[in-house]
Length: 499
Ligand code: BES
Ligand code: MN
Ligand code: ZN
Image (cartoon, rainbow, N blue to C red; front, side):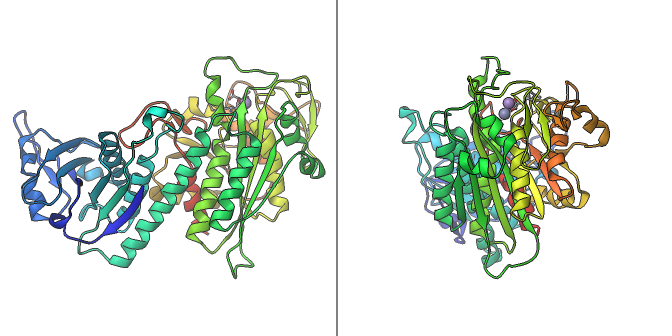
């Protein structure tokens, strides 16, 4: 999908579809009162064409749509009204979702071009332009790559129309940014959508290298021998049960002229299929475990965006990619492994493999010079029990670093909720046999997993994102398809840009 920005008056736009936003003003009261949706454009011709708004058939609820054919006084062939929800609570998220809704409404109807009027009130531009580009690009994605009946459905061009009063260069820059971020989120979603037989660790590495070449990142992909040289005993222990060689993916963003200041380390869990290993998972829903590399994909998506947005801070990205398989050579409960850091780990459950690969990824990021760390992983079912599929979990050993991440959420529009850490929880992963064990019992499972990672982050400021509950959408929404979500890409990008 091409994304473009135009400053032409709305009544002059020649297009198949023109989408315009409306907010619910909530002024109507009483049983017979008609709703009075407020059109977020000052264009008189559009207002006249949309006079039906007073009829009550459209209430401007969030992502509500009403399609008008042959609107009088406009050059557009159709006018699509999209609800933003209540005027008082309209945010950038409402606009991002409305743009996604516009694209997803248009897409299956065989129409190839869409113009979208940026709101000229209620929502600040240029932030609204950025959210619009993000929402449109994200809305265009469907996980139908392998469906031969769905090939021809796509919107070829999406044109946002900015009000004449807008500050041109700022809106242009923000819109371009939004497209980059949305495309990077979709880059992650494409990877997450791939089945385990296609996206092996080797293929994951190959795609990372192709992307790195495209956007000008340094890259180094290695496998078992390098893991042995680096003494990555925790990562290796997960790989040993698989016929597929692992991939240690390292990407580097080194902006010109930046030789000091922080080095941000992005570490992603890249388990391309998680059977559980010898502690094997039940058959029900096991097919979903192809998305156990969503944290790694999010990191690749984030660094792709960073390479294109060019913030003045150094970033390294490490993805630990492997399968977790049961096999004659697979690790067993009771085995003791020595991590790259030298810490010994008693394996209680081979299905708690994500923290093992991340342990060595975190240690390696520090060895490569990372001064601040962020990891992302579909780490625990427990985080979804705690927070549902609404908020992802975030943990940190440093309030300032968490603050920077948290401040970025308004712009990213993603929901993360901080969960606690603490020595009382760390007690649960103490081992009699080694330094720590890889599970901490029934209670507080997301927290004890985070405590495990904290042992390897040590004193380095660190954030841990547990995205297990949000990496996959089970249902279609008006603005985003079911399937891989690409969650965390936008928030990681925002965090990086805060340095
Ligand atoms: N990949 C899973 C976590 C997961 C579960 C992701 C559901 C997405 C959806 C992880 O490797 C895992 O198996 N975790 C175990 C940990 C337990 C053995 C301590 C879990 O959550 O049950
Ligand atoms: Mn597992
Ligand atoms: Zn897993």
